[in-house]
Structure formats: C-alpha cells, structure tokens
Length: 282
Image (cartoon, rainbow, N blue to C red; front, side, top):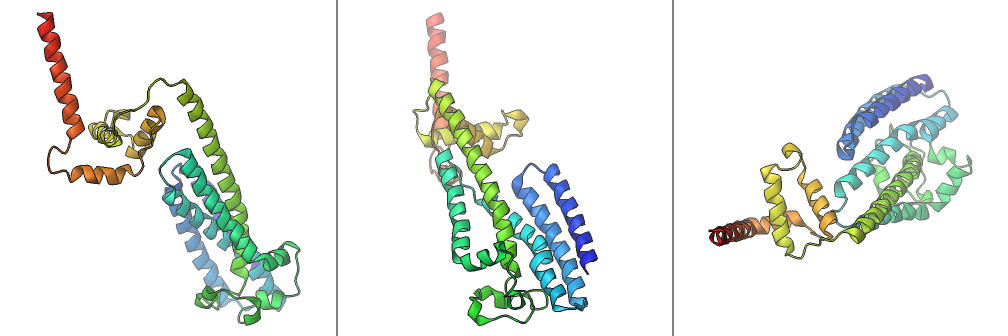
C-alpha cells in the first residue's frame, strides 16, 4: 500500500513539475494540474477501497501523512486557480488589497482551527484514532458540516485539515510573492509616472473606446495583444484608472447614435485640421 502510494505521488510530482515549466498562464496551468490531481486521487481511492489495512497504525499513517500529500496539492492549485481568475483589474493598490484579503482568509482558518493546528505541529498522537481512522469520528471534536458529505471509505474526520494546513502554508508563500511583485510594480510605476509628462485628461469612456478600436485594428504585436494587456498598459502610461472597462464598452455598444463617438470626433477634427492646412498652404 505504502509503496503504491509513493509511486503515485512521485508520478504526480513529476507531472506537476512538467506543467509548471510548460505554462506561463496561471489559470490554464492550474486547470491542467487540477485535472491531473483528480485523476491521481481517483486511482489512489481505488487502491484504498480495495486494500485492507493490517493495523490501526497503518491506516492512521495513511490518512495522517500519505493522503494529505495528494489532497493538499488539490486544495493549493484550486486556490491558485480561484485567485488568478478572480484577481481584480485595477491599480496596484486594489490588487495588493485583494491578496491581503486572501491572506486574512488563511489566518482565519488557522485561528478557527488553532487547537488542531497545535496538535499537528507538535506531532501529537493521542487523538489519532479519532482523527485518522475511518468511521471513528467524534461529534465532540468540532466536526465541520461538510465532513458528512465526504466518502467514508476514503476519508476520516481530520485528514483534510492536515491537507488544508499544508496547502495554506504553500499558499501563504505564493500570496507573499504576489504582494512583493505588486509592490515592485507600484514602485516602478511611481518612478515612471514621476518622469512622465503625459497624462490622459480626456474622458475615460473616450480612452476605452480608443483602446477597443486599436485592439480591433490589431496595431499591437501584429494583432496578438490581449485587450487586458493593452488596457493595463494605457492605465500605467497615462496614469489613469479605467475601472470596469468591459462593462463601459457594453454601454458604448448600446448608444443609439454614433456608437464610435470619440473615434468619429477624432476623424472629423483631423480632416478639418488637414483641410485648414491645405488652405493655408495654397
């Protein structure tokens, strides 16, 4: 049993390491990793449900030390996927606040599970039979409500909590790294804005209309640039916060008259300027 689990874990780690090097996009990477983990967990579950543990100690060891090494990866990458897909578009202050709120959620988990956290960190074992034997749960140890939705053949009352602790340890490092990256970007932006002589003084709606037009025309990177990248670049260069620009574009689309109002104005004024120049030339 232990040998099979170790082999599965080694194979899973190898696949994750490969995917980590293959993908730059965090959302796509997390999706692929989660898919691999779920497949591996399904294989592990089949092994466990067919296996008869030779002793209580063997079963405790599996659910206390082996299974969490698998499930912690699922919890971690699921959290990374959630954060990457929900990260707000906005200033570095907004992004930093988002990550700080995620850190608060981790702190809340540890605060709410402080007794078990101490039990785990001190390598205690006096409650192992209640925590890590299947069907041996105790209502007095503060069970979470969703424990009763888990597969009793593949779960104990607390194996997932060890996995959560392991996942949150990694996630805390991940978030700290993201906060540092955000602070670095903020410093660079401050330096750049300090030296910049250009600031957008037109309406935000007009700039959003222009950004969509330029992206549609494909004038950046041979048309391969993502709208999000262009919008973030304009916000940084012109020191302007565009907010929910996708929603603003939907409002632009619903205009009854001249939906490309700013673009039309640019065209008209440029032609007028050229006409004036022609008259002065002749």
